Length: 396
Image 1 (cartoon, helix red, strand yellow):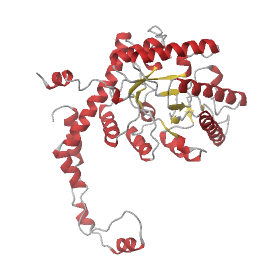
Image 2 (cartoon, one colour):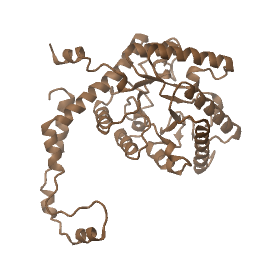
Image 3 (cartoon, rainbow, N blue to C red):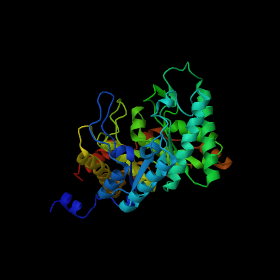
Image 4 (cartoon, one colour):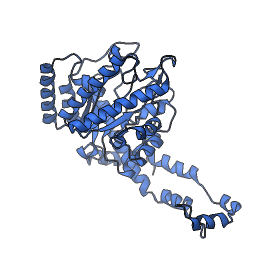
């Protein structure tokens, strides 16, 4: 029996509830429409999507308000839809960990939502978001994601950028107060993107939001939802942004997919374009013990039918678990650990440069560093990287 066959037989790459793998209704339900071509797949009802997620072993389903409830549904229609959906989730063993709101699809948001120039649009955006919060809470969600897909410009002539930031702050503060008043206990996760569908979006990266959050009235309630594709569209190292969010205590949620550099937002199957960067991401999440949802915000190729959509969803989860296994192998590899120990070893007698003290700073200032000796220390990063490649390619 080959190692691969044995691993499959042992269920090593089979998703389990403890992995917390989730998908959005909009991901499996994506019909393959693009700017140049119409849909290639039929509309899949939310209850059917939930059934498929249960079949393939997913843990959770996430949703925009209008993924489930049509934007102009009556109160009675809304309640009936929610009741049917909740029943489908219970039957399939699927939970709803996260909810969000669509403030980008309807033409009324053509100039943005919370940052729009028209006060009526800003008020409607708040109303729509409050109702989406009600919906998510009714379904058991504890995370509420905010992606400002239209919060941007094609021309900066339309408004001052600092005014947009103020409007956004006012809106998020309002949502936090509503969260408190209703006792929903949501954690808000802000999602960044540099461009598309607007020419420029105000909060372009996770770092922008990490700078914005401390200015809020309730910063403890607000974190971030980094997305692989969005950060890579900006040419950034996604894992670094995730690490900064984690270190700040703000990694409330994460969107996993993949992206070819320099392209439009592709939402490819996780790990399909950049397996090495996906490996470092998975390794980081597992090493630090991230226990939140691992949400796949991606969709199948336009060539696929709904059997292919299942292949896509299974592939996202399988790749994560393969990379999780590779990360454990990397951590246990004796050559790698020896190199890490070597490059971090302290020379005897070197003054500590951690927490400041008057005595410590005096010792540091008086020390004579031997720069030539420092330069003789090995930094075998080529070998370290090759060992990583060996592990990823399955030869170690």
